[in-house]
Length: 188
Image (cartoon, rainbow, N blue to C red):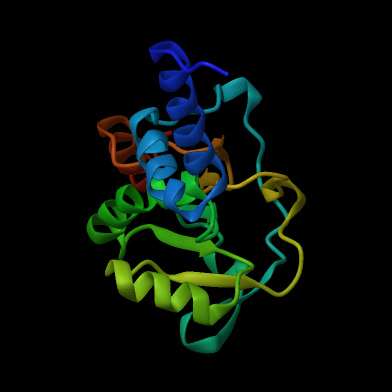
């Protein structure tokens, strides 16, 4: 079998694709690509918004404290379902960290995962993230259920789900910040 330049280039590209797709070395590349293709999340059109009425959801909060999602009713809430092994999830965490740094006392942030706490704590510490990580004790309300991650919901004080986004997004965008500001002032 004779190798010409075209076959060699194709073989190299195939090997590179295999490394990116099927080895741990490809994880940072996948995170980078997800970050590149992320755009600001869109608001759900007013006529298509759902109102969250069921706030029954038990969570384990940081420091192993049990909380019920009902505690956050009548507040602006950002719920993000994520995992450390998920490239789109990891890609959007720096944006969430920036939002949390600026809005952490005004907006409730719930970063919910089903992963082992040791794995999550190691990841968060290594990256220097201070986002509050929660663990579900039971299924979330039906309006907050998703079969994919990352899945993020932004909920207004009235329970209105104003963003319902699956996949990575640019959460530190001007439009997201403007939305949070309007929600905090009850102007949505």
